Image 1 (cartoon, rainbow, N blue to C red):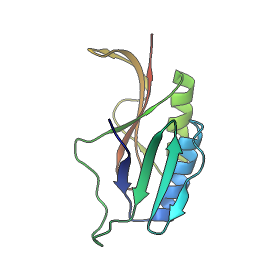
Image 2: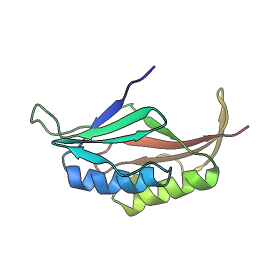
Image 3: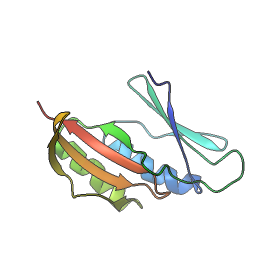
Image 4: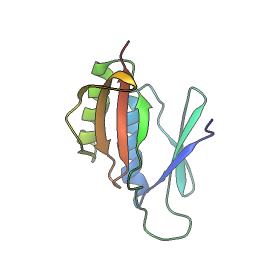
Length: 125
């Protein structure tokens, strides 16, 4: 369904440090810079981070969340910890099990240095 997801940043180097660490816990190689943006590629998906092309400040989507698949609760915890250690902030409830209409999931939420809301998710069988 998706070719890529792109978020904005006001500080490309700070975002690279954050996302290299966070996505590295999921086995994603470090990004490569392409001028004013960078890309992470894994399993046929592309996640990009860019300075806004229009020169305006980057901002996050109110109500938006980007989810990253984790292979276990332990990987979700490592993902969350790497985010906090590299300029992110925790948000919502602490990492843990949640149950709802989509089943039982282990969720870990944080915001990147630019305020984008992210979720590390492990769907439990």
